[in-house]
Image 1 (spheres, one colour):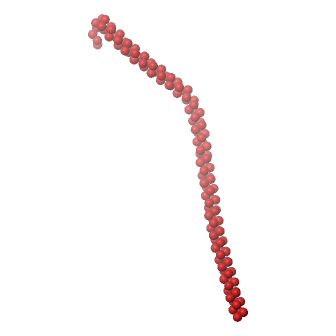
Image 2: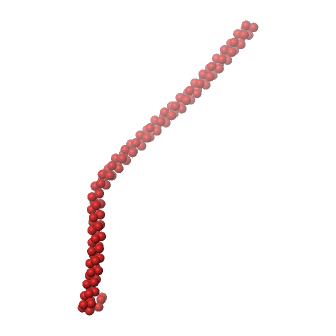
Image 3: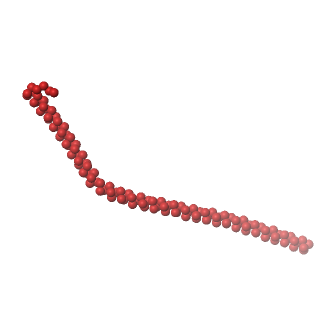
Length: 120
């Protein structure tokens, strides 16, 4: 009976040992899976950081380019103002030419009527 009792205890101890080994293996596997996921996440974060660093460099380059364009365009402001002034003068000149043309037509018709020359 003592031998059966010892065999039952040995069997129980072996079963418990197997249980603890299995649970330990399962926990180790899950921890390894979690560790792998965290490693993957770390690698993804590093990759995204590299990508955004590149975007930051592009944005900085674009900012410098825009600043250069602004400085160049400010040099053209004087020319644009001069062109606007010329356009205004041309408009006024066209109005004067139109008035002169009407005045010449009026003088021409008076000359025809004074000298009684038939209009051409």
